[in-house]
Image (cartoon, rainbow, N blue to C red):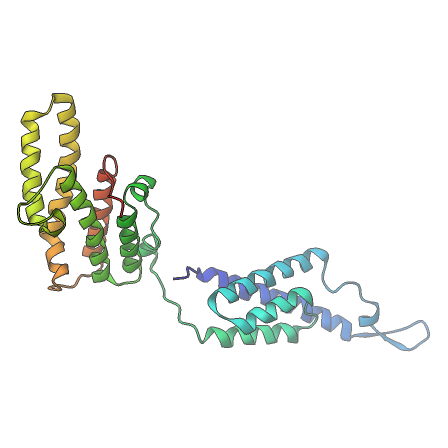
Length: 274
């Protein structure tokens, strides 16, 4: 999805209106006549200096260049072509600017732009901590997808992607703790089963590990287990079985908890290579 800010198009409009006004004023001056030395009428068009100053010409060139680039990006070929032509052959009349504005307005009507509320815009194309992206690349993609869904108003889809990410972390955590089952691999186990064994192993660590290492490891595993329980009890089963839909606030909480979960995991663990 292409990310575009509305103010770009506001600036395009003001730039074109500014240039049109400049050219219209110059046209007005050129249309005036004054007696020549031989007594005949001489138009200012024949004797006028440059229509625009060098600085104004450069400003216009940059405006047309940016307009052409943006129009190519969003699929406005006619306006893009007119803007690119204006770079090579600068407009000299207000009518030329009117034609460009008319083409711009007509082509814009063919596009659908989706508005992202300001408080959700931060979730679009999330930039995660480098530690998370490096240690959990596949989970990171799911988190970014969850953020894009949240920003787009697809809240249940956002929860679904958050849980796909969380599942990767849950199974990595279980593997690190040595969780196993006699009748199935870890990948096929239910979340509650992994959680139950994880909690048992954490309790066993309290008695078996040296004090310094125990404190560090127990703190790590305990923080991870808190998020794990939250996922399991609140959302994972319901979303997976399509029993419920979600609005903005629950979806936002799920995503934030997912990110917090991986902030903890990425300090010590990483997902296996696929």
